[in-house]
Length: 256
Ligand SMILES: NC(=O)c1ccc[n+]([C@@H]2O[C@H](COP(=O)([O-])OP(=O)(O)OC[C@H]3O[C@@H](n4cnc5c(N)ncnc54)[C@H](O)[C@@H]3O)[C@@H](O)[C@H]2O)c1
Ligand SMILES: [Fe+2]
Image 1 (cartoon, helix red, strand yellow):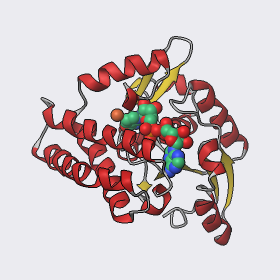
Image 2 (cartoon, helix red, strand yellow):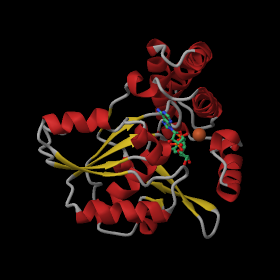
Image 3 (cartoon, protein in one colour):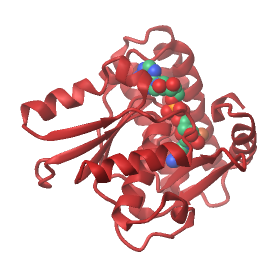
Image 4 (cartoon, helix red, strand yellow):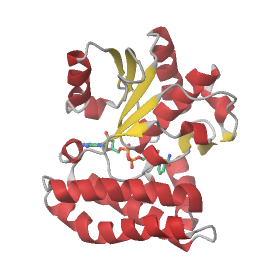
């Protein structure tokens, strides 16, 4: 898709852990083979702040990149969404906080999720932490939804058991909160129920044996379905509490 769209210089957003594990290399090897140039930024931290987003934006503009690929969990994908939207709108990421703040489309954004958790690759929001106010700031805009996502169980098979469990419970929470939402519909119930069934069956399998590719794939799809469900139906009290505690004490949302 990237090639069909004519992108020739790609900005890769990831984190240092994933870069050390060689996960982005699975994508960059392909780009090398296709003679597509790229610049890797691995500065994203869990629960990314405006500082790391601004640094990514600065590097993407300096490298004159025409598309962005996020390779990581929800933290990387959210940061990449903000970099892409800020680049497309020629604005600071802070100006995009709120609902429908963008005036122009995002720079082209593609995602490779490495956790089966947030479903951020399917959603129209991004969460950025403000380390000064200790609040999580939300940007919501349909233009933020990535153009495409590659859900690849091979990329997820090395995920440690505790991250598999924690992010998998995030999927369950998304699906249950969307299911119980007053804004739920037949469509969102379908995705939420599918995600719940998959988590109940496949999360214990993926936890026990990270190399079980069937379980990894089903969890990747469940995370995506959870994202589709809450994207329209919304979330509930668990996330309302988790966002406050997470922002204040810098603990991941699934630990709250
Ligand atoms: N935009 C949305 O729709 C949405 C929804 C829910 C949560 N979020 C946000 O997503 C963030 C959390 O994302 P997350 O739960 O995916 O975790 P994460 O992206 O913060 O990653 C957690 C840790 O796991 C590591 N990791 C990720 N994939 C790995 C792999 N395959 N192998 C080994 N290590 C790996 C990362 O390096 C990191 O240290 C939070 O900031 C939250 O606010 C966004
Ligand atoms: Fe969540």
